[in-house]
Image (cartoon, rainbow, N blue to C red; front, side, top):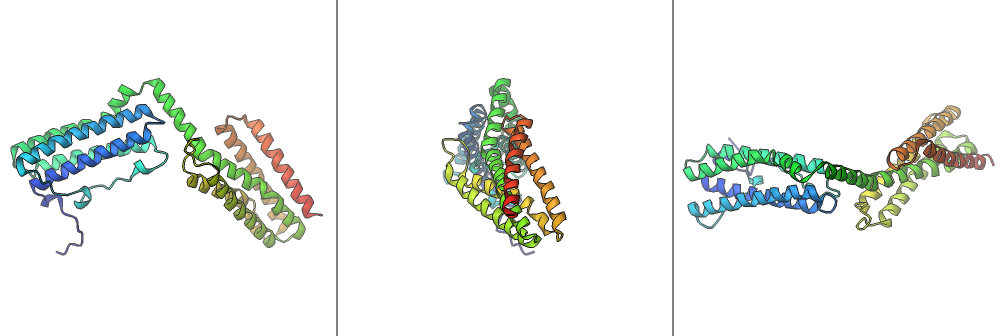
Length: 324
């Protein structure tokens, strides 16, 4: 039977290769946990301690495996990694993400420990050397404990006050990195495009031409706002995250805000297209007010008043210009 995979089956590994693979797994997982700790240390220092201790545990396992390997096979350890063997899950590099998401990290840590435990339990059945079997069995038990270690360490390091503080920090970062730039874009797209759209509508009474003007205004505003946001702040000091990501969020939301009340002008009848567009505008303004009330500590009625007044002024300007 032909095999097109360059990976080796787990059942084909020798005892020497199993130990070498175990060493590389512990090294890799230790680095992953320490990278997690580095990424979390500024905003989530107590959670960082959880992964520092996990990394230290993995380093101890690595040392035990290396000592046994040198005793059995010498000092030259074959270079074999998880991606060289069939059946191993490739983990997404969450440690490269900005910002790092605690829930995703903890879930991935559980998957890593579960997979490693299964590896040690399976490896025991392929070894006849008693010393190797004993160490693999001990490590399987340790990895089974690791599956609950994050919870135990959380109880040790994260009291109720700390958990609440970290949750507040996470919410604050979410607002800074996603909500604020998205809201700025949505407001700009929804309000700034009202004047050119309705000016074109009432000047031409042509739905297709109005649609083209609205689309051009929305896309142009999205590009402009996206670049403006991306270049306004590198995020290093403010903690607002990647400028490129914020630029994309702002630009897309700006375009969406303008296209929302532009799309109704695909309707051929001018009256119904305009009525639909006005309804969409009211919905957009309500959504903006709701987002401001929920995330920006602004009372809903005040947010609605500010947004609606601004929107109506721009809307009226567009109609006056279009009828001039």
